[in-house]
Amino acid sequence: MINRRNLLAAFAGTTLTVALTACGDKDDKSATATTGGVRKVQVSLDWTPNTNHTGLYVAQAKGFFKAHNLEVEIVQPGDADPASLVAADKIPFAISAQEALTQARAEGAPLVSVAAIIQHNTSGFASPKDRNLTRPSQYAGKTYGGFGGAIEEPLLKTLVKADGGDPDKVKVVNVGEADFLTATKKGIDFEWIFYGWDGVNAELKGAPVNIQYVKDYDKALDFYTPILITNEKRISSDPQLVKDFLAAVSEGYTYAGKNASESADILLKAAPDLDADLVKKSQEWLSPKYQDDAARWGEQKDAVWTDFSAWLYDQKVLSTKVDASKAYTNDFLPTA
Image (cartoon, rainbow, N blue to C red; front, side, top):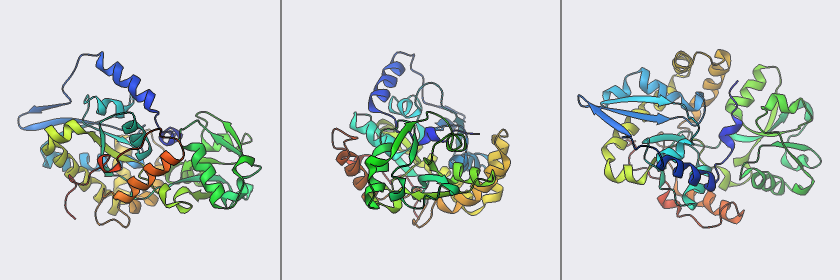
C-alpha cells in the first residue's frame, strides 16, 4: 500500500537548499523539448500514483495534452525532492503542497503554485473507532504517532487548544513511515492522515475511523494540499507552456471530477499495481472535492495563502515572513 504519510511531511528549507546544490553539480538538461511542433514536458508526482494524481492520467489518456500540442511524461520522484528540481528548472512542473512551498519560499526558492488540485484540506487526525476519540480535547492522555513533519505538532496543538484541551498532555511518539493501520495496532491511538486514502483504506479493511479534519478547527488550516507548481523563471520566460499545460490538466481534473468510475479505471490502467478496490472507493470520495465550491478547478484564494503563511510564522515554523501573493497565481487557469 502507498505510504501517504510522506505526503504530509513538509520539506524543510535546508533540505531543499541541499537538493538544489546537488542539482547544480549535474550537467544541465533542457526541461522541455520540441519535436514536430509538439512540446515534450515532464511533470513529477510527489509520491507514487494515487487519486490525488488522477487528473494528470486522465488528461494523458483522453488526449487533452495532445490537443494542446503537448507530449507529457508523468514521472515518479527519485532521490531528489521534485520541488527542488522545479526550483532549479530541471523539470517544469511537479506536485507539491502549500506547506512545503511556503517553507521553500521562506528559504528563497522561486517556486509558484499554479493550481490547487483539491479545493479544501482533506487531512485530519484519525483514530480507530474503538478508541472513542471524537474531538481533539480527548487527545489528552493519548498517544499520537508522528513522523517529524515541521508543522505536525503545531497543527496538533492548535486543534487541541481550539477544543479546550491541554496539548501538553498528549504523548507524541515518532513512528517513522509506519502506516495508519500498522501503527494503531501497536499502541498508537491516532495519526495525521488524508482520509481519502488512509481513511478509505481502513474502512475497506474493516477498521472504521473517527477523524477530526484540521480545517474545521482553524480557518487558517484549510490550506491547499496538494498543489501543482512551477517556477518564476518558467512563468516569465515560457508563459504559453504554463498556459497550455494548465489548460489540459484542468480538463483532466474537471473530467475526473464528473466521471469517478471511468477515471479510477484510467488510473488503474496506468498504475496496475494499485489496490483496485481502494482506488475506486477513494476516487468516488475524492472526485467531487477536486473543484468543490470553487468557480473553476484549480482556483486559489488569497486569504488561504495569507492566513496559512501567517499561521506558519506565528507558530515559528517560518523564521521570516513570506509574501503570500507571490507564492501562487491563478493567471494561467482557463477562465470559468
